[in-house]
Length: 444
Image 1 (spheres, rainbow, N blue to C red):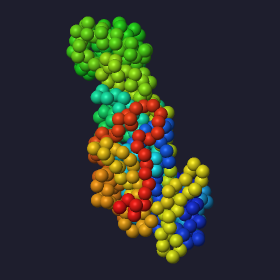
Image 2: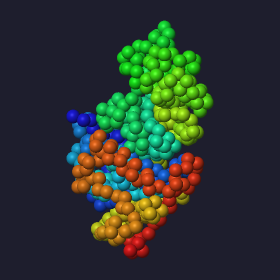
Image 3: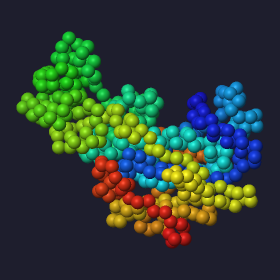
Image 4: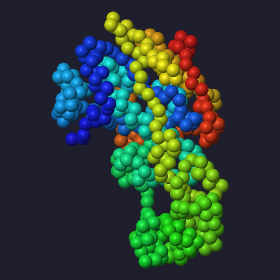
């Protein structure tokens, strides 16, 4: 039996339900929306990631005996609320952007519809998953843009919490990385894994030559040898002498990488190892990768920067009530009006307007009536962005597991081609396309 995810939440979610059950508002139909007010770090686009993980976590969002016992012992809620939670099952619907999709300020990334009690309780779980994974995916996408056709490997597990490391590897793969060093990410999500040896392997042996010879005997000449434990030039010479000119690769993890890479390439070519690839690691981020664009580097390994969002560890998304039924059953659009923290009320349909295949705006059509939302047919020059993710409480399994990850990766590669050229720059700027709000009547 898989562990419950029900307590991966904040206490105030349950105290609100407790109060709503008392005053009779718990069963009011509501629409919640998960979105970002801005793109953190003045980035030009964001990447949605974590959706498939969230759907799987939702399947396990159940209050079993242990969870109920804790809530009872801590006096978090009263007996009536415990009874409600014991039978809790999300029975509503969730629509949203596909995983791997691009998003911009105000994009309705998830729309959660259900009773107040069954929808409000998902706030913390949804935000914790999407804020982390989307931050990593956005950083990874920027690195992928900077790397061009050169492959990227994620190797930051030691710089993140153990479960966060697995989630980060997944998000990075969706956004363009080709492999991970994390074996659990490989097992759970089907991501290709990579890795050979660390400096400790060389230090273990009496000589660098002994270490290289043992690695080649174990892994073959196609392996990648770490050549900077001692002297890089001597390390390259020893590597080629031991492995021959068919050596698969060398890895450089220190020094002035553009200079060192050029020197190593020249030395390899002089030794006849013209096909030996050069992989660089050493605290890379998107800016360092971009600076290496003209260097003779074949692949990159990125650790700390990608798993921490490259300076932006959270996507800054929020989860807000945007519509509810009133006491008479009519729908009311609601919105927060706080300074710099406002929201736009009403249910929304989202479209990416395109000109010759290039994105020009994020079009968000706000519905006043809550009956029918705009469809793609009403916007022939745009692409509909929202898909059903949960219907009548049942998550769509197509977005889960390893198959869901591959689908998200393929979708991201497709939609990134729609970005205008200015979106690919790494400098701080406004979003690459504007977010345009309109009502259903104006949009027709």
